[in-house]
Length: 210
Image 1 (cartoon, rainbow, N blue to C red):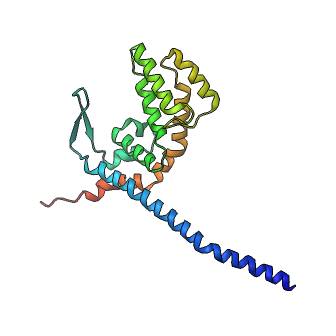
Image 2 (cartoon, rainbow, N blue to C red):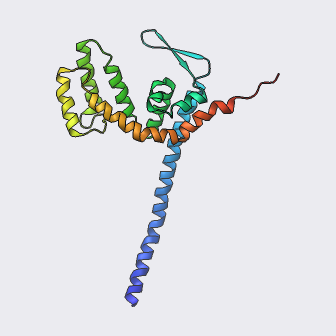
Image 3 (cartoon, helix red, strand yellow):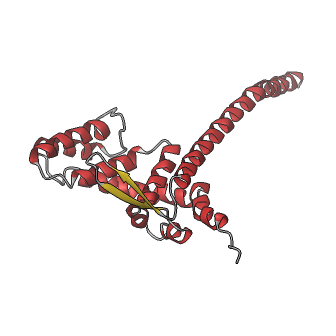
């Protein structure tokens, strides 16, 4: 009986000794989470400050200008109706990518965008070169931005890029699109990141005096 009590006391003491360490781990996790939240709020703030209801223009490498509009709360809310609505909006796409980056999984949207650009290439030589770059960046084992696809799809892509066509990455792109639509997209819509974006313009709008 005494030995049983002694064993129980030892067990409880062991648990008590682990408590400070557990608290430290929880504290570290909490700090990391706060840092991530602060990071995406900074990014969101950047988007809001560098966009307005008026037209914004930016020049690309060829000197052509792209027009950007800050979305109204109503436009931002449209993104919740369909994933394609979000991807079709340049501001929404940038906000979604910033959200994915805060979750350390931006490789999915980067791959999807790379595939979209790939399908627009007309030169056969450039097509082969771009196909190899996409494979090296996203597909091969331990690639810098390796995406999560099955082994068979990887092998099929490795064979297809030898004679690259616009459909080389179609299966992988569909897989990644589905992952984003079913996982990251719902989280984005439920996040403070998106909710704050929808409300920001409403807060800043004030009735003007006559």
